[in-house]
Each structure stands twice: as C-alpha cells, then as structure tokens.
Amino acid sequence: MNDQNFQKATFAGGCFWCMVHPFDEIPGIEKVTSGYTGGDIPDPTYREVTTGTTGHTEAIQILYDPEKISFEELVEIYWRQTDPTDASGQFADRGSSYRPVIFYHNEKQKEIAQASKKTLEESGRFLEPIVTTIEEAKPFYEAEEYHQDYYKKAPVHYKLYNKGSGRAGFIKDNWK
Image 1 (cartoon, rainbow, N blue to C red):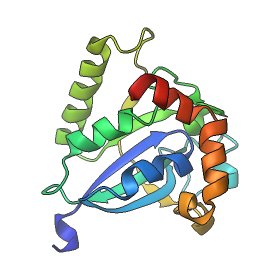
Image 2 (image 1 turned 60 degrees about the horizontal axis):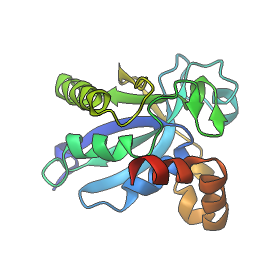
Image 3 (image 1 turned 180 degrees about the vertical axis):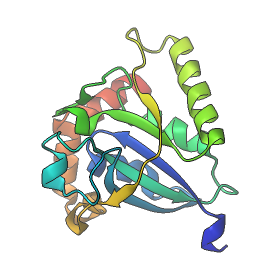
C-alpha cells in the first residue's frame, strides 16, 4: 500500500505519552506520533505548550489504513483512554493543553465522531455530561523526539506515570 491510501486521525486525551501505547500495535495503524495541535503559533515547543498560552493541546496523530481499521474503531479506542466528562484536563494533567478533543480531518470523520459521542451520551455509562469536543483539525506539529514512543523509551517511568496519574485506575473502573 502506498502512503496516499493512508488517512489521518488526531486525538487529544491528556498526556500524549499515555495516548500512544493503546494505538501503537493495532493492525492497520502505520504510525502514531506525539505532537501539538489546535493552537495559533507555528511549531511550538513542549515548554511553550505547557504554559497554556499557545492554544495548543497535546495530541497524537495516527496514520492508518482504512481498509484494515476504520475511523469508527479508532474513535471507540480513543473513548476508552479518556475521561470524557473532564474538560479541564485528563487525570493528573490539568489545563487547556490536556483537554480531550477529537479532531476531524473531513466531514465523514466529523459525522462519525458526533454520532459516537451521541451514542456514548445516551448509553448512561457516565452520570456527568460528555464534554469531549469535536473540532476541525488544525496544523499538527510533531513533539520533540524524546516524547516519541515514550512508553518504549522509559517503560518503568511510563507505567508509574500511567498508574500514578489516575488514568489506569479510571480506565479499569469505567471502561473494562
């Protein structure tokens, strides 16, 4: 398959370190990149984004083969990595740079994301409102190299962070 047949999916769900691993080894996913999107300045740094003044959020961008995995399936995986009721960040990561967002790259992705959100709202799984936003994709800037595949580069720290942040427990209690 050549690159022009791949599609992009972009999700924000708190710390991008914890968002990469759930998608990284799924058949049909070619690449998962940590980065920043949604802001107004070009090529921001981690330090700039974490100040909360650039408008960016930490996100992952997935390059995937739609013949092997659908956008609907990616959205379902996404929901199960987040607390969709927390607009102020995710778990221990607080502030606008950690807000939950599904970024769409075309109208079909937008429709799929909206339908999925509605299904989740109507499911009664959560007592609080589903506040994850669905926004048009903006330029995506790859994060610094030390952030890429962090769960592989620092597996012990990653596991401690994933647990200590409250993410692992929330997922176990609410999604499993």
